[in-house]
Length: 374
Image 1 (cartoon, one colour):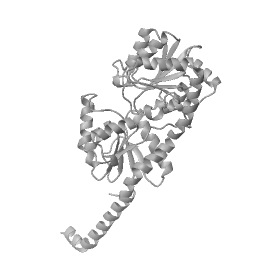
Image 2 (tube, rainbow, N blue to C red; image 1 turned 90 degrees about the horizontal axis):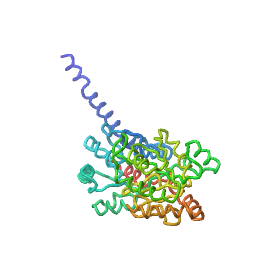
Image 3 (cartoon, rainbow, N blue to C red; image 1 turned 30 degrees about the vertical axis):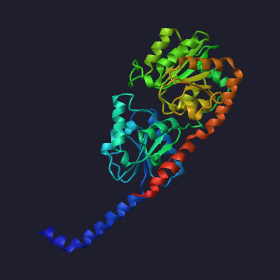
């Protein structure tokens, strides 16, 4: 009874005040729309993309709330960027319809396997809800266009590199780093810094899209003519290590826990080989160029976009161990070619600094969505 009398006394003003407060809060939330980058829980490639993009956006656009998170479940009226198709598949069903959606699709196609086929099926189902799809290469752009992705939703923005962190080093520091890692004098040190085993364990089952079998065959052929030493980083490298041991090729493998240590591993290399069948980048392309490491890659991911064959790197066809070994031999034998490629690559990579790439994300993807409102 008392409650009824209180409501009859305060009902109209109370409801009016509550309604006004609700509208004010809703308006404020809409004005405070931010950018939320959805990452994987693992400390690996997608997480690092999110950290660097959001970190740069906070400096470039401090008035816009920006954050990285592993879930979109609690977000409303925000711009949500799923860092990969796998982040998208894991979160889309719990993502509120009030959000504006962006997804990065770096590589893959339905023919790779049943899991990938299901992921692409999910992406197709939710395509009308997507505001933008970002990919890093023109190869993947063409694949997405053929698949039916509307051009107005599709953006090509390359994977970047931190040019403050990844830089060339002095000959003296290079010698010091090689000795610190136990790399013998006089060997040709070839780098492979990736994850090419299935799962997050020892990695004895090869992830064939990354071409570990092609890499092994390439270095095996090179070892017949040169003293080869292989430097590995990254998780799940068991398949590669067993193959090197079977071929009698010496190597060192370190799973680097601190990303800032990675440039010192590049500084030990004489050349780097990307032997993949499928790639989004890889990040090794701009990282090699930035640290002064001669680069050879199959024509995957960003490689045809960033590498001019014979100018700032060398290209070979996918699954072509002969072509990769021949390209490596050219770099080993021809000092002038090696120096020219390194010099030109350092010029090329200046356009790929993460600060510039992040500006492209804001200008081409986020800003148009933020201007549109709900």
